[in-house]
Each structure stands twice: as C-alpha cells, then as structure tokens.
Amino acid sequence: MLRPSVRICLDYSLHVQDVLEAVKIMFIEVAEEEMTKRGESPNISRLSAMTGMHRRDVTRIFRHSDVIEEPRGLVSRVIGQWQQDKRFTTSSGKPRVLSLEGQDSEFRRLVRHLSQDINPGTILLELERIGAVQKVRDGLKLVAKTYVPKGNIREGLSLLSADTTDLMKCVNENVFRPKETPNLHGKTEYDNISEAAIPQVRKWLLEQGSAFHQRVRNFLSRYDADINPALKGKGGVRVVLGTFSWVGTSKE
Image (cartoon, rainbow, N blue to C red; front, side, top):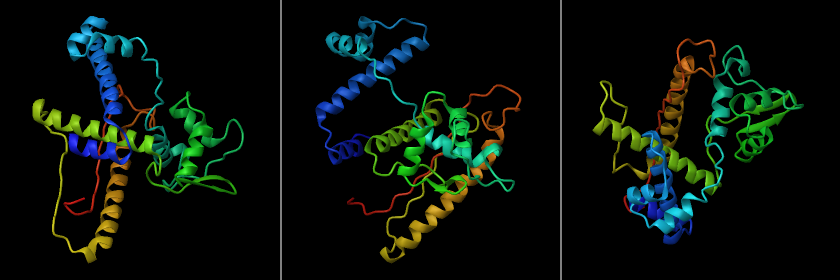
C-alpha cells in the first residue's frame, strides 16, 4: 500500500514532512473515534498511549483540531439523485432539464434535498467546471453519467481516499469478519494484450462498466429512502459497489 501512495505524493510534490503530519492527525482522529465508540472520554494521556505519539504532538493536534471538512461526494450524490429521483426525471426515467432561475428553482431544490449546508451555486460551479451540465434555454441539462474531478488535485485525492477506504473495509470484513454472503471482491487481469487493441479495449471496458453501474443504480434506488421516502423500515445503510480499470505496462 505504501509504494503507490509514495509515488502519488512524489507526483504532487508532497514531502515526507507533509505526509507525517497528515498521518499524525489521522491517528488522533481515528483513535478519538474509536474511544468514543467504546464510551470512553478521549484525553491527551489516553490518545498518547493508544497511538504511541509524543504527548506534545497529541496536545497540539487534539486541542487545535478545528478544521471543518466539507461533506465529501455531494456533487456525485447530486448527479445520482438527478438520475434516479422521479421528481427530477422524465416519464421514461431520464434526467430532466431542471429550472435554474429563482430561489425555488428545481436545481436548488435538488441540492437542498441532499444538503442544507452547501450553497447550490457552489455545486453548480463544480458541475460546470467538470463539464457535467450544460445550460440550455429551459434551464440546466445533465450531460455526465458520473462525477470525475478533472484537474482538481484535492478532490481527486479525496476520491482516491474514499474509494481506498471502502476497498479496505470490504477486504477486512471478508477476511476477518466474514458474513454468510461475502462482499463482492473480484479482479480480472491479462498482461500480454496487443497494443493495437488498446483503444478498443478501453472503450469496451468504459461502455460495459457504465452500463453495469446504471443497472446497479436502477436496482438500489428502489430501496433508498432519499429517492423513495415512502419505503417502510429504518434506513441509513450504505451500499457501495466500486469498479475500476487501468491500462498500462508493468513498468508504469
């Protein structure tokens, strides 16, 4: 896990001091979360013993951890809600062109349905920046199927972190706390593909993967309380299905 992480750090000019500071902060945050789950009250001494960090570092981080992190994945959730919520789709199930003008526009209602804390204008700017939407005569049209933070290093690394965390949870549960029906974890690899076929391979993987995820969204959206508020039973369960493809040589 460390080698690809170090490679990314070097690609983006992150020094070892930057990484060490981030690791220290994360150790304190996770240790505090674990202690709180057990009903314990986090303090400097306990955090120092649990993490193995010097008290001065624990004190510095624990007493000044006032950085507010924006909710991750809101742009992706807006796209997903737009694609699946019947209030924002056509009779054939495709995303509608949403009204954009005014305080009670359909786009504003879409964003407010998911978060009251983020300005809809901020989400609109990001959607425009990545080319996910297009302004048309009647309002705003969704042209992207998924959220890819193109050119945004911070959002790109955040996406990598979130996906890696979910993969680790999947493997950890399958290996150490297996359920009767395990989490899906599969990988297909061939290492001697013709270079001439690569454009076709890339296109096929993207098309087939996108179609598969659309089927998954259509299925899971039936059981999501945000999209179907009339569903009976307690909600709050998170279901994740992640896929990826990479094409390159063993030297890359």
